[in-house]
Length: 622
Image 1 (tube, rainbow, N blue to C red):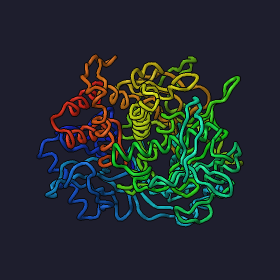
Image 2 (image 1 turned 135 degrees about the vertical axis):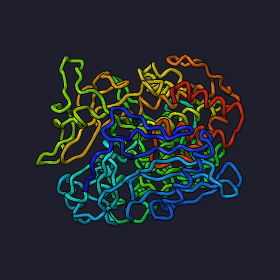
Image 3 (image 1 turned 180 degrees about the vertical axis):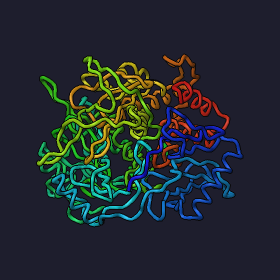
Image 4 (image 1 turned 90 degrees about the horizontal axis):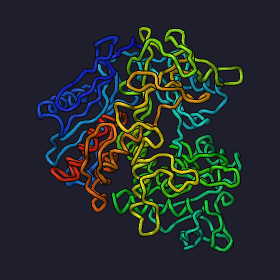
């Protein structure tokens, strides 16, 4: 079921031409092509791509999934066309097309897979693959439907016919349709009505919209068009796991709640004394109001669906779990706490809550248009490339590609565990990649998590471009100075990772980090499977900061004339519209930059805001 590798996977349409980046390519045959045709392309290039898309649509290679009106520009529409091969969907393949009032194409963005010759007849049924996965992992498969069949792109440019399966361990699995082996897995978790009152963790008073039932007050906001529900796990793992997974394991339809009155965060007199509940519930409402007022986006899902939050988890993290997980099967937001030597600190600061909620907005804005169950895909890295044949790590150990083995997931009689996994080599060289979709996800969450602070600055919110700036131990990341946390601030300096490939559990990111193709360092312990999402996100969020505030980029030396804080809303709207209306299901940082430039050209042609966005993206190497 697997085709031969094609290593022309760094091909991209940028500006006016199709540029093939040849980095010791194994083959010059086409593989995935990143399509970015719009304001930066000449009219002939745009029309050629438009004709290609129309031709693929006529032959069934592209299928229209949605057609939505532009929320910012009258007469503009956006359609998404998903890619198919011989009637089988290509996971992550497709294009987002913008049309003017006359139906003429304005822009095209996406990832198209050329020269596909993967088989489309599975040797195993979805039921058989589900049974194999349950036996292999000890978890349960998503109830209420067969695993979905599609063609999965792999980092080396090859393809496999595979089933996508959601399992109760919180992962989406992609299993080979020929023998059931796992090719890749993606986590579903993205980690960081009366009026009551309470004090936040910082001691500030907050008003809460609550509901009184049975002589108690529930953290259930019914006053906003989108209901907001806060459930209290009370540090009980079984309660948390039930609320996360019971809905889809019980064949329940989306939107039907599984929680009971006992699961609510409650208070006897509506003067709330748990600051974790106060912060999470109040800040979720504030974030709803911001997205509605600033961007016309109603609720986290864009349709005023209920927002459900879990608080008081026994984990040092905060996260968004995408559908089909959560107490209604529509996703959920969850907040744990950090433990210090003498105190505990919940992860419910305003910018962290806004960060997680933006993960939900990113998910639903892309999913609503593209039909992608993941929203912005994190399946295969656009721009994977060949690294060195060998490298010597910080301990003095030399790793040669064909014999190197790194920590990773392995199978044991009890299920997956940590062991040593072979490096993924192509022609004796390490295969390097980063998670582009993950970096975009995290960058957007940082951008809008911090934008909330400026929007509510008069209400006492922190406005500082520091992600987690109110934490006792200091911020996680600085959009002003990515180097504060030793994160890259320019695309050429992005962190890439040597890939591994287990024969039964598929490919993953190793803990070995590379910069500009050279070994940079190794993550401590068995830290693998991370594609640098948060670290590389600063490239995009730093560009946002420069577009607003201006300044000289540390490494490129380029000076950006920002629009200033008084015009911050213009930059926010450009970035938000890029995600809401234009972003394809699969993207890289360069492709995201092209989408953001297009958004600026659409809503602010010839303006200082458009110039500032372009200068800022150029300064960070995009």
